Image 1 (cartoon, one colour):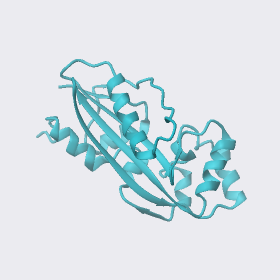
Image 2 (cartoon, helix red, strand yellow):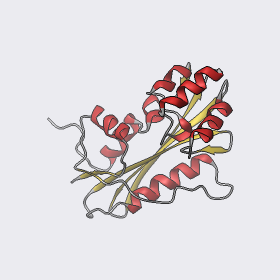
Image 3 (cartoon, one colour):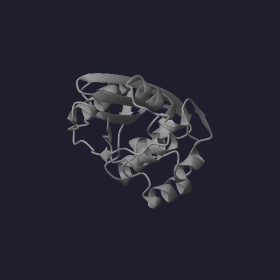
Length: 190
């Protein structure tokens, strides 16, 4: 049984490595990640993770692991910012407030799915103009849901979380291990 990671994220590779795993192949799917009109953050995130898993070409016995991470402020989905201006808007909206980070996992073998989503609460400190502009200048916001990554320079802006740190990074390690075991993947080999 081969494990295929349906993601180009170096963070997800690192998190899999925490389980002692290296995927047999990495195949990032190309799907439309646009939210549907009125779609709420959690169902959106779960739909995208499943769509990614469905889009990855694999043999019937291969296990395809995909995930999606969404940052939500109330009902608003804060995706990957298109530019520094949108990143600044996201960060200012979250400044001094709590928001949610949802990561959905979809594991597929043939037509069978194992799925789970994890929601964490995150509080961002109130950002000064100097902090915001210095952070935007790093470029670390690029390709990151909500315009930041907790494991990067923006970690200095996050004094409190409730939930799973690894889910906020992009792949909840405990839940991923549970799904892999449920699918019959030999996680702990002697």
